[in-house]
Length: 163
Image (cartoon, rainbow, N blue to C red; front, top):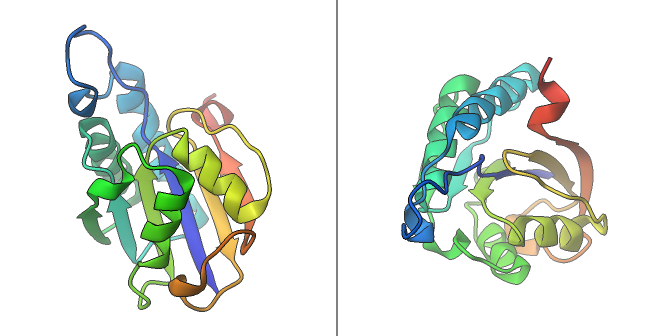
């Protein structure tokens, strides 16, 4: 059985009006929520073997803060296909993950992440910024991932963890 984790990037800044979307950094709230989610994953005692991340600045920063707080030393790869990806493109990324990785963490964006979660599990859930979902896949190889091959184990948002 494989496990897929989906981490939507944390809250980004809109301070610079003409800044390209790809280059937008995290804002203060995002800089707090990404490590909060990382600490949550550490408490769950889950360590992904592979992290596939969008190369957009806000996703890169989210991954860095999250992995540090989670105490992860997993391999991290940036995959351009994740930025602005549809659910079907994300499904392709997942299906091509290294078979040696039992747990894969994807760091990216909506609406693709909400659509992928629905495609894999049949559940329609909102994934606000910095949300983390754990999907148990009923496959033994990533290459066998397709629609309805996953079950949502949990979905946690930063506001669920704040005091």
